[in-house]
Image (cartoon, rainbow, N blue to C red; front, side, top):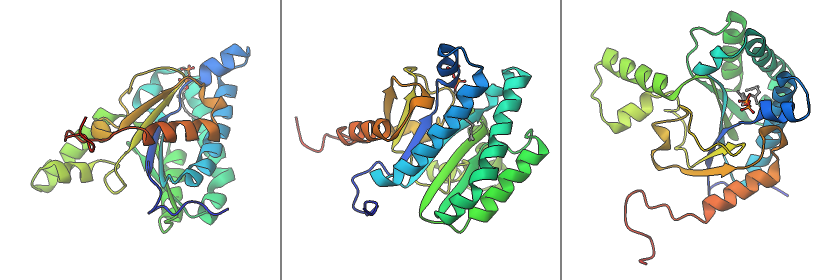
Length: 238
Ligand code: FPP
């Protein structure tokens, strides 16, 4: 069966996910946190495969926040190692399947080999148009807003909402329709602060390593049952 025609699908076109609960998933099994993160990568791969079947054209995931540097040196190094392994094993497939990868967040401060991997991944997938994968890495929503403000101030461009939105690291992508957080937590944790203005939110009580197509379908269906008004009147008067 072919994927739904993206122009006909009812949305959401852009889903952003806070992939939470890797540590708890591991702790419940008496396993090191690193195993939870490794299983988290498997859940991410499943989600990338499932999203187009549900009409989603862009997926943004929170891979590593500016606050995550405060975790133990061992855990930070495990997470960096997973990025190396993921890109090493999956870049060819992402290219083949038409996925354009964009990394959101500050490049400064990344280990040099990760900065190279990020640049190479973006360069080699730049021409792809089937699907867009945005990975927030060394990302914080406030830092991204500050960086956009600095960029606009330095360029001298007139500042309005459109110009500001374009200056963010998500600026050349589609608007965020739906933000999902797993593991039962109900915070935004400095993710996509500007972009969340008119997004719908779905909080799911599943730990990220257990996430699969049925969970994504549940979130998409919840989105479709919402009445998005953007501050205006209801589509059908009450
Ligand atoms: C939250 O679980 C998850 C993270 C901090 C990172 C998510 C990372 C991955 C899924 C793998 C690496 C990413 C890429 C892009 C290859 P947590 O550790 O906060 O869980 P807890 O709240 O249960 O402790």
